[in-house]
Image (cartoon, rainbow, N blue to C red; front, side, top):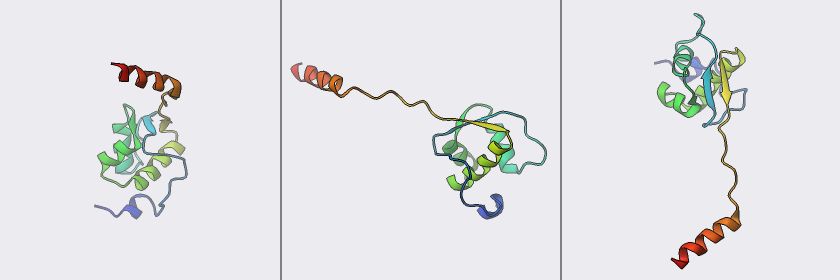
Length: 104
């Protein structure tokens, strides 16, 4: 097993803003000059996977996975999708529900 700094080329922080729940989807086939880890990422990302899932599959820390994903993003081989956030809950509606449950 190679050391993390060898896999990431000595970089420790990803240049792109990525977090654990950012979804990554392969946009193109793997060119032959990719590292084994990046080629594996492209294979795994045929369906959307979060950066956290990729990190677990590759058994790499999040920081190293994020650096490799950022390289794939820069090369146009993957696209990122932000997870859809649920709309905020109305506090008044919650109060009405709680009061209704108390009356039961």
